[in-house]
Image 1 (cartoon, helix red, strand yellow):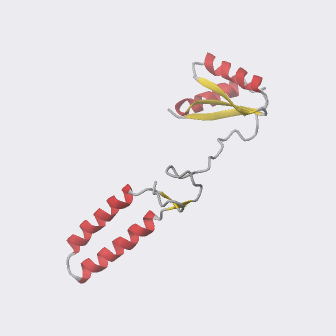
Image 2 (cartoon, one colour):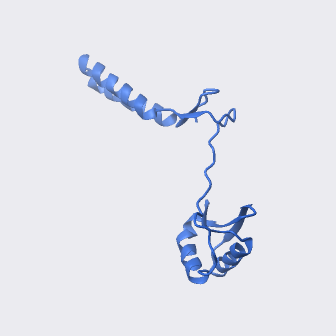
Image 3 (tube, rainbow, N blue to C red):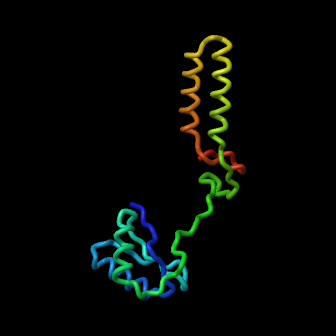
Length: 140
């Protein structure tokens, strides 16, 4: 399962106190210390609301950090590790193909074939990746 940060503290001791309160309440928690000035308390995402209630009730006096959000990771290409990533514009490509299929289908009076062409384009666009690497051309 995925873990989420429910709170963060400047002092690791405060985070460990919060973890003990969560453990006592039956919520599996862990303390993550990405640097010496920040300690996050993380729980399974299904326990996050209950953990927030426990921390509010039992650990209200611990000084929290204002922003306990997750850090954003820079997306890199899985093939070449390049950070030069752009969206693949799947929706625009699908709309272009669908418009062309409808236009040709209407002109040639074969709307059923145009409909199947649009379905094939939809499947192709769903299979195609959401991101494209400009360095190596990989789609993911």
